Image (cartoon, rainbow, N blue to C red; front, side, top):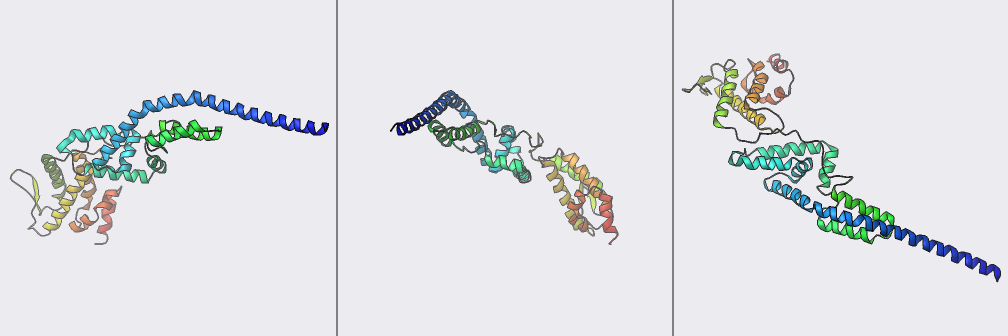
Length: 297
């Protein structure tokens, strides 16, 4: 009986020790909750207004026909507020293609950058997409009965606040300030005259000047319609380059760049030139590129 009593006493001692250890760990956990959760709750409350403003900007951009991904990416880089303000300031002078061009460029950059795509997919608040998600995570953290569960919910709360996995992107998009306004009639006339100065020596029979000294194509001359098509295509290409938000070219710079690419096409049929413009624009040596057509003609 003495031996059995000793065994039972040892078992009871170990159970008491385990209970005391569990109680001690729970006490530590509760103290940790009391220290951390009130501060987190206050800091989350302080960020509520900022989070609402970010969401409102994204919503405004979507109304203006930005894609959600493009708007979110701009908000994550801190550029959306300025761009929305710039668009609003342009009012009726905003070119109709600006937002679609900007969105397309942003979408392309997101698709070609894995880390950026992940950040945009996570959105503005990481795994906690709403205030309800945040409140539920806080409740789960408060009710946690072990360190592992508490640490998991704590990480979610910190992420919601923009902590170790901060929902922002350091590298800004290279978007040119000051673009987005429509190209005015005087600017179009200047573009066409720059192009006319370059094309008239090549297609001299087709080009004439009007009473104001501006170039135009006489479509009644041999090959005139083909030259008119080339002239129109080049004019629109200059417009696209000048409106592209991801380069720094104005209308004059864009027209001069086009002239550099097209001047070496002297002697080549206007339709052939029109059909191969994109490849010429991409070529580092347009003279060599256009020479390939001379060897086959």
